[in-house]
Image 1: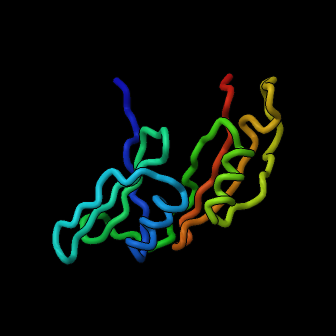
Image 2: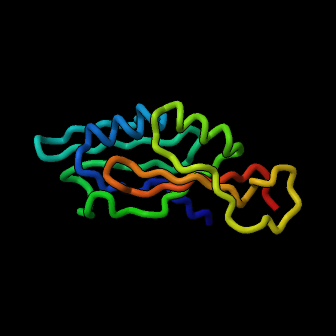
Length: 135
C-alpha cells in the first residue's frame, strides 16, 4: 500500500497576504479558495510539479501560531535556476549553501547537498534542495 503526503497546513496571520506570497511570488497554483462563512476560509495551493499541496486558512484549520512551521522542504533539479527565479520574484532567499559532501558520484556538485532557505511573511521556514540524480 502506498502512503502519500498530500497536504501540509501552513499557519498564517493574514490569509490574503500569504496567498499573494505563495501564488504571486512563489508561483504556486491556487487549487481552491473556498469561503465557507464570514469566519471560515480555506485556500489550497500546490507548488509546480508537486503531488503535495499546502493549505492556509481560518476557521477550518487547526490552530497553530503563525510562523511556527519550520523545516518545509522543496526539491528542484537545478538549484541555481531556482535561486535565480526566487530572487527575480522578489523572495528574500539565502545564497546557495553546500551542506556536507555528496556520498555518491554525480555530475553536479550541488546534487543532494545544495540548499537555499527562505521564510514566508509570517516566518514559516522553507528550504529548497537540489536533487537531480538519485542513488
